[in-house]
Length: 193
Image 1 (tube, helix red, strand yellow):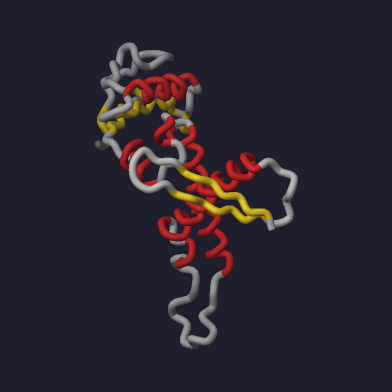
Image 2 (image 1 turned 180 degrees about the horizontal axis):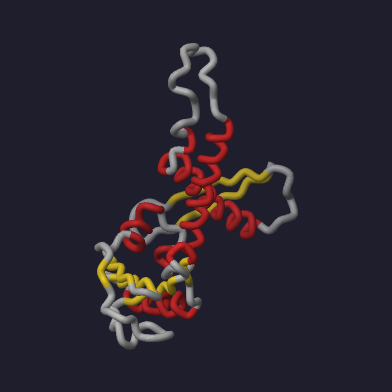
């Protein structure tokens, strides 16, 4: 067994010492092994989020609550598998989203992402040919401006809404000039806030 000891220096307070026990690997450089060990934190964090925040261990509707026999609760394997799969996809989507954010939010916790990036007011305006999404942001306005330009360049359409074009904005839309194909016949009507 190979033992690596790493010292974590701090500006104030006690220094921390970490012992890393390596089995079956005598050739890999010590610094490479320590970097690999430090990278495990993201996997452990994802597991913790799935376990405690996505509740994968206590899946709702995972078993028949009306079962009269407590020895045979009647687990629904497909429900458990689907729930765990959807929770995993949601965590992966948030992780991928955090990779596109500024450096301090990379690998951020889902609650942090919700608080800083996903939970802010917006207005929806519906016209004959487009759906305008007006974002009312509190911070990181320059980052959102770039993302809005990228989203609008993709010319996203909603097939279930008569193939309306989705346009994002940081300011209220101007009905005469905001729609690319032609001006709408009337001013956009507000859907909800």
